[in-house]
Image 1: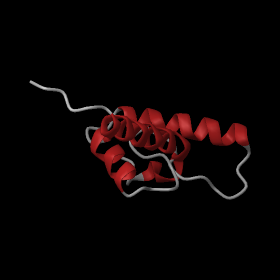
Image 2: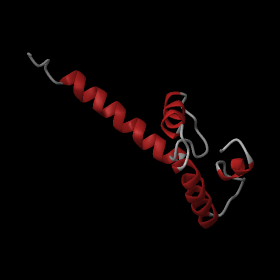
Image 3: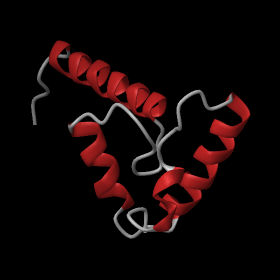
Image 4: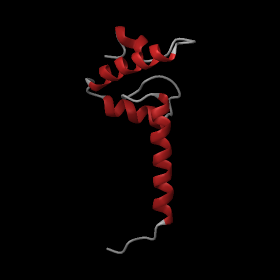
Length: 85
């Protein structure tokens, strides 16, 4: 879907006003919500990491939060003692 006519929804034009950006991002997320490969798209954007645009229903800022949480979780798992079965 996002590779067709809606592609402009997913990336900000230069100097886009905040209200316009938020509206565009919400419209892009609605397209993502209907996408059969949304999860795969999101994981691609997190693994690359993609610095711009809406991917898998997340903005660049939202992806940074997800990545930070994943890093914290990995650190916490490494710190915790191994559990016996």
